[in-house]
Structures are given as C-alpha cells and as structure tokens.
Length: 471
Image 1 (tube, one colour):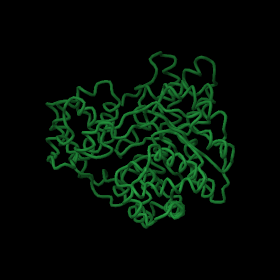
Image 2 (cartoon, helix red, strand yellow; image 1 turned 30 degrees about the vertical axis):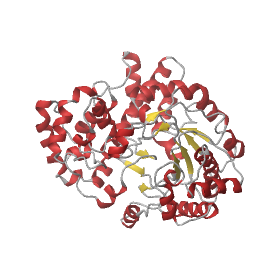
Image 3 (cartoon, one colour; image 1 turned 60 degrees about the vertical axis):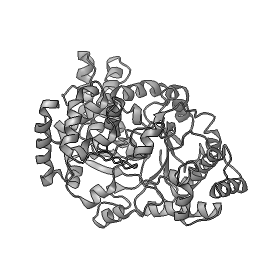
Image 4 (tube, one colour; image 1 turned 90 degrees about the horizontal axis):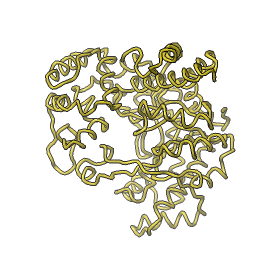
C-alpha cells in the first residue's frame, strides 16, 4: 500500500493525516465481529493453495465474477446440485487474473492487492500474463512456517479475534484453542453467540435444528438458549449477534410466543408468524444480555438468498444477498423503552441502509446510553463508505457513541488490510477537522487511537458477569 494511499489529496490535510495515522498504525487489532473459521487457528495447518485461500471463500470476489457471467463453480465454489466444481487452484487463479480488470476501483482490488504485497510480499501486478508467476510466488510463501495461521496471527498483531457460531455448535475448535492457551475467557480467539438458525422459522430445516437443540416446547427452547449462552461465555464469548431481516422488536406475552413456536413446529405457521417471533426473541435475547452481560449486536437489512438460482446451486453465503431499506426508530422502540437506559445493557446497531445513519441511527446512539453505532458493514465497509459514515454520524453521535471498526470477514489474511484502510480513512477525516480548526491536533491524535483500539475494546469489553459495565 502506498504510504499516502486513501489520504486526502490536499497537501496540508494530507500532511496532518500522515501524522495522525502514525498514532494508530501499529496499535493491536481488535476484531470483535467476523466469520473466520476457528479451526484454521485451532489446527494451525498450512493454508491450501492460493486460490483456496484468496478466491474460493471470498464472496466479494466470486460475486463480481458471477455478475459478468463466470459461474462460481468455475472458481471452485462447491455445488449442492452435483455440478462439478473446479478443483485445480492454478486454473482458478488464471481465471481471476484474466478478469482482474473487472475489479478496477473496487475495495476487493484494494484489499487483494494489499494482501498480496503486504502479507505475502508479492508485488508483481496481477494480469493474465503474470498469473502463474504470482501463483508460484504465493505457493512458495505458503510452504514457509512463517505463513502458518498462528504465525500470521502474531505478525498481524491481533489482540483478540471473535468468530461466530450457532448455538448448535459443539465449539470443538474453541476447546482446542483454549487447551493450547489461545481461547477461553480473556483469550485471543473467542466465539460469538449467533442464534439466527434456530430463530428463523422460514430458514429451511428449522424444525430439524430445534430437534437437534433437544427441546419440544417454547419454555424449554428459551431455557436451552440461555444455557447455551453460558456455554459460549465459558468459551470466551463477550457478545451475541443477530442478523434479522428487520430491526423489529416486540415483547409478546409468553403464551402468545409459545403459540407461534408450537405452530412452527407443527409446520402450520401463519403469515407474519416468523417476523413476530424473531421480533419477540430480539427482546428476549436483550433481556438475557442484561442477565449474562453479553453485548448484543444487531445486523439487519440483508435480503438473504435473493439470487435463488445461486442459492439452489451453492447454498448460503456465496454472494446472493442484497441490502434492503431498514427502519429503526419505531422498530426498536419496544426494546429501548424497556432497556435503552439500563446500565447493564449494551446494543451495537449496524445497517446496510446508509440513509438511516443520519436520520435514525446517530440520533438513537445520541439519545440512549445503551446504544452504540457499529461500523459500516458488508456492502458499506469500503473506503468511501467508511468516510461517508463519519460524515453522516459525527454531528449527532460524535465519535464516542461508535464502536470502532469490525472487519466482518471470512478471509483471514485480509484482516490487517481492512483495519489499515479504516485507520487511514479516519486519519483523513480527523485531519480535515484539524485543518479547518475544528479540533486540536493533540485531541485528534487521541481520538484516532480511541477509534482504532480503545473504543472497540471498551464496547466489546470482557463483560463482568455481575452485570457491572462502564461506558
């Protein structure tokens, strides 16, 4: 990455951005929300070939190529319908290189080229005629023990990495990490409680998953989820994560919630049941957070599996989801009426709907001590998206009602790159405030360190189980 990449073009502002960036550049990385497979670090095996490390699991990459008519199975993405998927890493890599021009101006190009150069030391420009040279150089690096997962974790200066697991997970990888001194409470790799797959009635296989959970009634279901949260906390979890379609919250009477649950188990759900149940469970999980101290994260607004053909062939999480407008002010009011000023409760709100930042989310964070704003996420975690976020929310929420950066990635090697992008963007934003004489330089230096390190550590703190928290 060029030393001035992403800094403002104006010479005076750029000079200040350089100075501010130095205060954040080498701070440890706090990664409180992501989807890295914990087995990668638990097993600490050498990474596979470059294609399976950089292309196959990255739906940002495969999605762009699919939009140009290159189906994911040609990129090695496993198929569910029997369509043969490419298995030769070099063939996959050549296909990426031949179409690298498609990524001009995108964050995927920035992230990938930075991974190649800054993580692997490969600076040859990626093109069709350099594909094999780049591939061979990467293969050579991957054979070196210095490029094993735990060695890279150390080099990346990651202080804590949170993964995301279902209540049905046996957390085997986390148990191995704890045995090795890497996991558990206060560990370097921790889990996050993500119950969506046992909450969403309309997610195929819901009833079978409830059977695996070992419950038959609503009351048993709630008790089991409360117990699973305790198991996750014992494995190091400090937060839960909820990816509902909307931000709706509704506190239903127990008997009414039980009736919704029973109808779903019988396969007799009525229109609206799924939305009401997930809205009720959002409140129920918030109440559990007051009891056990887990920070609640809410990631609404993704229409999952919008590309039906892609979902049928490849399943979930391969680039077939689309953002949707999301309303928060009225949707969250029942939850905030009950818990918005409770000092034991903390909720971090994310969005895929940029129009909500100024109109709804920043005022909510500025109006309720329990509410924090999550960083731009998914389709918005781009250099320009991060910059627009600061411009949209700082007037109402300031800096200290935000929760720091989250990388939200499955691509382990992109973690330091993504954090560096966020730190550079914040340096540029703060530099403008300094050069406009709106913020002293010393305060801007303190602020960028807080945004990069201290705020996410404080918001996603190792919560005290007696319920005591500090804002």
